[in-house]
Image (cartoon, rainbow, N blue to C red; front, side, top):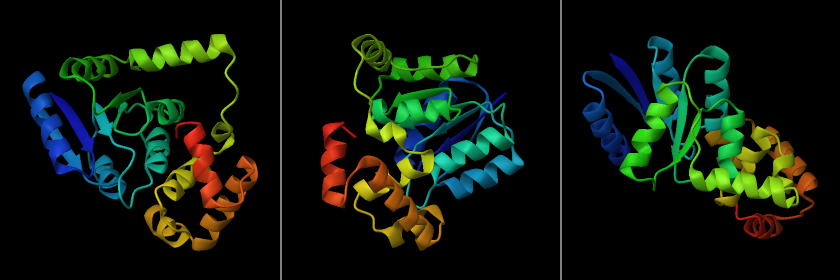
Length: 208
């Protein structure tokens, strides 16, 4: 019997995927978590055939969760299921250990395809993302400055772009305010920006 863990802060999304999994895999066991902390607790007590995880959740360090899963449960199969920009986040999470990146806009058939591929130990990326990677490699696309950022710096940058303050980010990621401030300074230095407005303009130019 397959066992799944759905990590998403939206109950409607979890319910929809739960219904789909229950239909495809009979019987199966499905557990749910609304944030990274509750997901960590579930992982301590159960082994899962597949973890489907969003990457934009309140009070959650999702990159930290991805890295935790890789270290503590290296055999776990993770499929990212998100509305976040695939061209920006897919490469980072797959590099961190995820076996696929699936958009919530995907068709039912595509969702089934992604789930089955990952369960069969194959990586999944969409056709559009595969084409983008191919185009970039052949066209010699200029380096994206955001690729210079560490996973933590990129995560903090993403939260800054949503309008969160340093103190709010410290609560979300469970970090000291001074630590977040240090990361923010390094981000500005690496990206050669001096304020949030410049950061947003740079992010827009790279479709972040």
